[in-house]
Length: 147
Image (cartoon, rainbow, N blue to C red):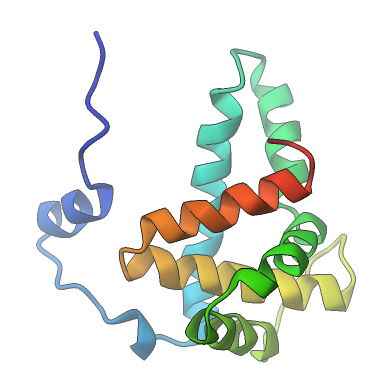
C-alpha cells in the first residue's frame, strides 16, 4: 500500500504534542546544532535506506561515513558559497560557539565546521525551510560523490 508523503512531520509533532512553535532565531547555536544533528541524521538514514535493502550494520556504516564531522566539514566547504547572508551568519554562529565537547575522531576544525553545519540544518528545519535544507544536503552529497 503506497503512503502519501504530503504530511508535514513538524506540524504533526507540534500539533500531536500540543506544543507552541519556538522561533529558531531565539535559540542558541548549540541548540540549533543539537536538533540539526538529528534532522540531518534522519535525512541521511532515509536516503541510505532508499539505496536498497541491506543489513543494518551496512546501513549504519554507510550512514556513519556521511554524518561524521569530517564529511559535514567537507560538505559545508562546498555549500558555503551557496548560502544567503543570513544562512552564513547562522552557520558562523554555530561554528564559533563554545562547545564543551569534541568529536572523538575529528580535528577541532572539522568538528567546529560540522557544528556550524548542524546549526544551519537545525535552523532550516525549525524555520520550515525544508526545500532549502534538501537543496543544500543534495549539493553536499554530490560533493562527496555519493549522489
